[in-house]
Image (cartoon, rainbow, N blue to C red; front, side, top):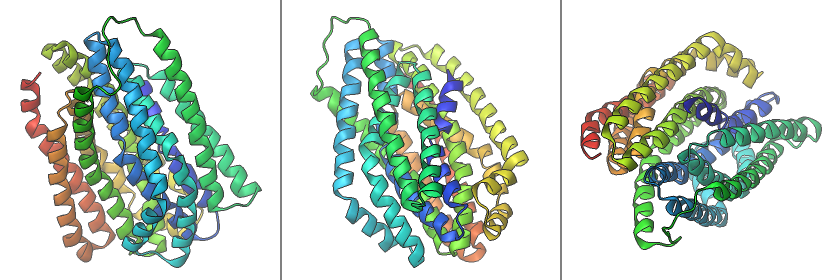
Length: 423
């Protein structure tokens, strides 16, 4: 099960990577910087509301393990309703959001101009993206990993074709990249809704009834998602500060860090694929109250994580410079990125623990502990950032990111016995 989820997950950051690669072959580095800032804003928002996926898989798997198919049906309805509400609110607040972003980020005039254009087009895809998160989380909870993989591969292939068409044929530049992603994401949502409709018809009949607006289940959903949102605020704030501080180092270093940032994103999404599998598999064990199965399956999940981490390291060692060259043709950016390539190459050694434990905690719906450990790790990141970046520049920035991942891994491992006792 983990293999298809990993493949599905690593296709997610391809949307941003394709955007970077397309503009990376335009003549000026500020095009990459603009997409870097624009994509960073969307990564912040998408990660922030990834609770729609993370908070859906575990409870759906638990309901399936308990044989409560009425609750399984109600879960997708609640998640899609929440996605529509959140997406609509973000669209309504698009101007204050972009205004606040550039109040906080120091960037060149060219970067700000094109990043603003990118954001104001792509923001209209928010309901589609969040709806897809809800759908994929629900399908993962039902152990349907093939459908998300097919949809995401199709969406990314469509995005590549449209981006190249809009930029190199129609010469729309950065707005063309944003428009391509917008169209691809809505088509992905339509395919996901079709899959939901077919899956609902295949679920077994259930004598029990589950209300869409059941107060107890809504309170549980809000509690889980609130913890995940607070946890995710810290995670995306690390990514946001990483790009914001990179902008202070100049357009070339910003562009280089944006390229290397995709290495981190690919690693995180690959490991998140294992975490998603953990939520589905271990969530069923929690629903059955089967601690022995939970421990056994958790060992398998960590084995998969180790393999994924090792593969990432090997790929970056062998093909890292080639990937950089593929993403940008600007010599200065290539050289700057190559000099720091070893950081994202070695970080899977520690990130494998943080991401996999996230899946374990989500399967057990022990989100409060997960939230608190990430908040403590974020405090460590901020301290390292403001202490080391003035001394070591860009290296200090990468050290701070490493400290954040190490802190998460150590704290989640420390508190795990408490999670196991509750099963």
